[in-house]
Image (cartoon, rainbow, N blue to C red; front, side):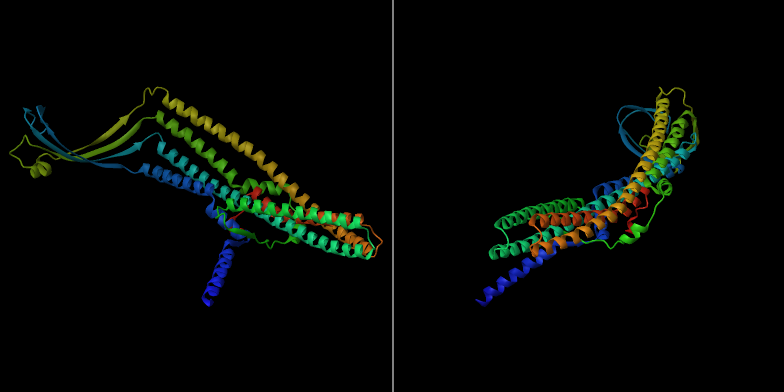
Length: 444
């Protein structure tokens, strides 16, 4: 029997331990760290960065000579000409050759120079894309983190309201039994409690849904329960901080990775035109080949002697190739490169306008969030005072239940508005940093 009870309590402890393990407390910094680690888009862009690094290394290597070794062994049946003896034979012949050769480009119309510039700009563009993708992850994680915190606060307010209304219901029941209040007051309050219970259920459901979305964004196990911890950010500093729109816009143009990416894309497209134009110019290369041959048609000389002494050859020289007619291939490449440059200029111009709109909107939202929080704070304080007065009036039999209910709903609405305004203001610094390009994972 003792053993059975021991196993029972051991099982309970294991269940409690598992439940404790399934709850993950996350502050904003930890959530961002997980998001950056698991985000698929960021991983994909980092993979593309490796590709661009490989292309950059390949472009640098264009200045090095091309070296290769070539070996051949074959058996010929029938008539053939032997290059070693200069005779024509009709027999079964064994042939072998080994060559080592290389080529070096002396002039290629500056193709290598502009190919290096193009790959360097493409590499910088991809790095800026990785940086902006990191900022996108931080922004999305932050907005969902904020939503979970807001849902938690709304649920807490509704639960407090439900507890307070349930206490009021018990008081009203006592008043009804004492004959100081009518039964209609009790029924009205019971309906109010039921309505608040529905609000609590809705708030719980909203919290579960937003937690599930947040868990999916972080790519965590769906069985993990996330408990978001409120960040220790100062509201006072946000309320006193003032920003100038022109300064914010200049910061965005200077620091935003997507704008830097647009400029790098322009440089890559400009270099692409010169890469295509280089194909019009002649190409001058130096070449050299060193090797030896063996043939069974010279039986008086053994294999090693033919390979290392008698049949040794070394050729070298210059090769000049002049393009004359290329079936409009180079012209087409040049047109494509030119249009890529025009499109990159249009994209940069459009991005500048979009950046101004985004920064302007973020600045206006920041100012509105400050005013909204101040108004919500005043609304809540006034609603709190009005509720206390109406509650006292009702308890002494002066006020009515309708007045008390109205003040209660005003208080709850004020608390919800204050919570929403508070979390919105807290997140405004992240929003401003995102749209000005100052959002850095190291500073979170």
